[in-house]
Length: 378
Image 1 (spheres, one colour):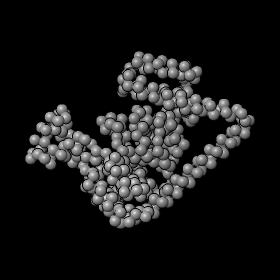
Image 2 (cartoon, one colour; image 1 turned 135 degrees about the vertical axis):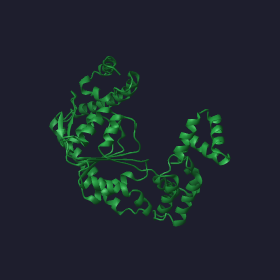
Image 3 (tube, rainbow, N blue to C red; image 1 turned 180 degrees about the vertical axis):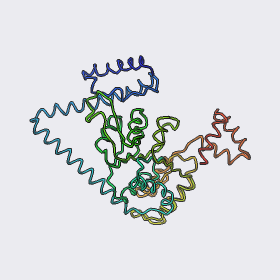
Image 4 (cartoon, rainbow, N blue to C red; image 1 turned 90 degrees about the vertical axis):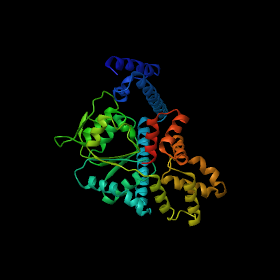
C-alpha cells in the first residue's frame, strides 16, 4: 500500500468518526494499518476494528453520563475502589491457580516431552537470554508447563493473555519494564509490523541497552515515546502467522525458540497415562472406557485431539453415561482431506494409486496430496 492509498484509507476511516461526532485523534490509525496489505484488505480489517472501538467508546461515554448523576469526586472514589477490588480479586485467583499447578499430578511421558521447554524457562530466568517463544497446538500443556517452571524458579513475573493493539503492548511493556512477562496465546502481537518492531527492540540491542520506542499522536499513549526495557519476554502461541516474514524471523533470532509437536501415537500414549490419575468420582473402569472410545473414534486426521479433550469427555460421561457416545461424537473434529487420504492408503496397494484417486475425487493437485500426506505423518 503506497502513501496515496494510505491517505485515501485515512479519509475513509475519518468518516466513521465524523458520523459518530467523535474526534479522530483518539484512534491510533497508524498502529492499526498494515502497509504490506492492499487497500481493500486494510479496509476490511479496519472496518471491524473501528466498529469495535466506537462501540467501546460509546459504552464508556454512556457510563460517564450516568456518573454525572452523582458528584464527580464521589464517582471517582467509587470507580477507583472498585478497580482495586477487581484487580486484587483477579490477582488472588491467579495466585491460587499457580499453587494448584504445583499440586496437579502429571505423567512421566509429559515430563519428558516438556523437559526442554522447562529447561529453556530455567535458562531465561537465570541467565542473560531475554526471550523465549514456544509454538505448539492448543490443549497440550504449553502454558501449564511454562507457569510451573516460572513458579519453581521463584521469579517475579506478570501474566497476560491478550492484546489487540501495538499501543496496548507498548504501555504494558513500560509498566512492567523490569519483569519477566508471559504472553499466553497472544498471536495478535505478531500480526502487526509495529508490534513486531516493539518486540525486536525489547528483546535485543547491539549496544546492550534495549530502548523501546513508539511514535504516536494518540491520546491513549500514557507514557514517554521511548524507555529502557530491562525485562524478559515469553510468548506461548498455537502457531506462527507467517514463518516467511523477515521481521518475524528477526524476532525469532533474538530468542530461544521451541516448537513442540505431538504425533497421534504420542497423544494416545500420554492419554493412556493420564487415565491412571483419579478424576472426581469416575472409576478406573469409567476412565478406561472413555480412553477406548477415544481410540476408536479418532485418527491421525482428527483436528482437535489434545489433553483437554480427555477432561471434556470426562465431564460428558459424568453428566450422563448413557448419552455419552451421542454427546461426544460431535466434539471430535476431523480433517476431511486427511481422512480421505488415510482411507485411500488403507485401500490401495501403492501411494501412487492413492494419490491418483485422491486427485480425481477432490480435484486437487498431486502436490496437494503429498503436502497433506506429510501433515498426517509428522
